[in-house]
Length: 304
Image 1: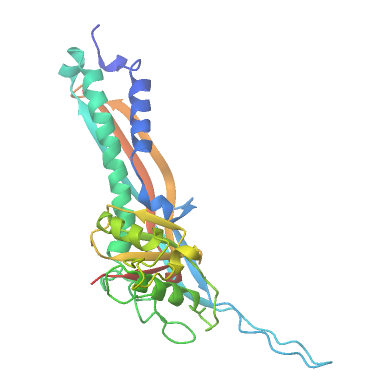
Image 2: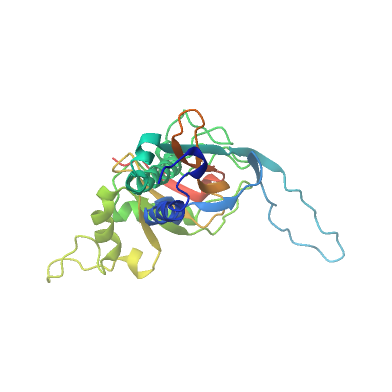
């Protein structure tokens, strides 16, 4: 069959499109396990920090109740970006019946590229989190000891040390004692440990053992309980190969709008023909943003 511009091999397209979609779904998306997923319906979304109220005061009999105002804190804007890539099957390849062979190879490769791009964009929120070149809505880096609040500077920057039982215990305590902008304890809890693959085995030794990591069970050594496991303090571990620092580690909390993944337009895979070259084109596009809103949603250590 002679393939012309008017009869792009549409009979093969549903299979190629399904192959692309299945390939995209098959590739891992670590960020989905530690980012808060949000939808967007415009070019950008703005998020405003609410400082909350002060503490309630005792009300003497017959006296009026005191009233408070929650002021607006810092503002963060996440601007949606379109990411796209495509491939071409030449007219000559179409004439020679190579469309199916070429597309079955290139469609999964394109799906992998789109997936990797999105994973990198999200992981870079953490990768750049210690850098003063990437500031948040409050004017400092994501992981900082000087986040400005109404009650003074606060910190989500953990000690620069390798992942350890002691480090996780200290991080858990810091999270449980974190304060609001007004300086009140929030009662937050740790949620997910995010690490590079090189820390996977170390994390398992720390979190999965019934006893403290490295403890012996003979009569002369301690066999103290591993409190992190016994209390179930860290519910999930995410291995993200797109992290660039092998010994950095991060601990998300149950404070909402920490790390935010903002979807404006879902992934699309479309086809067309070029009038001048008569080549067949296929492309994938997706529009989204990733960033952080409330620093209390994640704590980070740069490692040793």
